[in-house]
Length: 236
Image 1: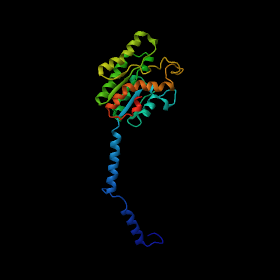
Image 2: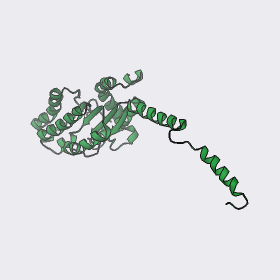
Image 3: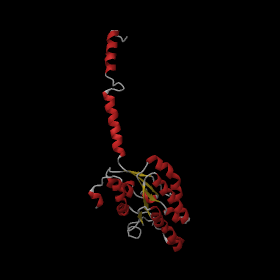
Image 4: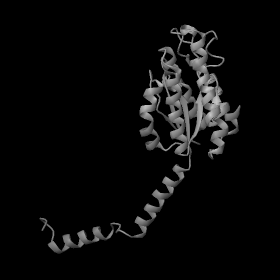
């Protein structure tokens, strides 16, 4: 009993409140479940892009929002989901070790592989780079994902023979696995004034839209094949 109120009135009010609660199986609950299921289904129709890269894809030394991956997300305008799993300093071995968990977690429709720069700067064997990238390509294709290879070039510090062996890895993988290839991610950037930071390795914020355009030419057809509705302005 509540002080000042008859016990019967308290029970009556309590009963009325209980009657207003949605019961399992009620129309309100069914409508809520239907709405949640519909929302989840709509969200799942957007293709998922998984970016596996190094500092070139993490906006190193510049604002994150200025990086080419963030600019890609802006250009897509919600027509696809972008997961940037890139890490500064990442080698192809590091990427390969993380890849199985990432592909299982995100179930991507398209995988952008931007790895190898740190292998080249450290003088690691090109054969090792090829094995690591091949493993990620095979895992992607086995999971039903398309792959876009983003190639990179390196300075001739270790000699022209090493440089050729390094760059040939990307074209050979593209031919072997029938994947599209951006031959050089930093085309129209690497040797242009004002496009590289003082370290000579990482692009400036001004270079990021150019990098995105280099990627977009090969990425757009994959997006369309995956069902993404691209605005016409995105092709300009």
